Image (cartoon, rainbow, N blue to C red; front, side):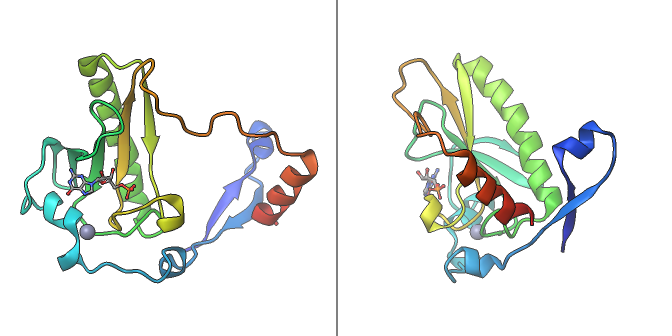
Length: 171
Ligand code: 5GP
Ligand code: ZN
């Protein structure tokens, strides 16, 4: 399915100018050809309640569990009950549901755990650090001095490099 997108400039002008098409690349290409069968999937089993977990929240579509190897105190995962390997595969409605739930969970966890900040993290493909090939969103409460770092102090790109990347994505 192709989607139309609008540039920020056109939004500012109040025009719905169609600037470029977002493509839906093959999920198999994106995950290096690995497609885990539902029967073999640990997160399918956890989501279905067949394997026990520390569940923080559950509804028809999602289960939220504590991560076995937490990056910080309270590190949790939103797991859709339906098996989708990654972001390229999940339907837009499910993606929207994940973000709504992430917002609610972040507010509750921040208050209850006395966190001072919060990261959402979502890995797709081995290259990006995904180890369990069932879509999940990491909920990571942050505390002063917790020692976790992500994207800190990157070198600034040149305007030419940025222009080239922008062209690749939008033209
Ligand atoms: P990824 O690296 O795929 O984005 O994240 C997978 C996460 O799942 C890791 O943080 C890992 O600790 C967690 N994890 C892997 N297996 C289990 C499990 O059986 N139970 C729980 N609760 N977490 C798991
Ligand atoms: Zn699964």
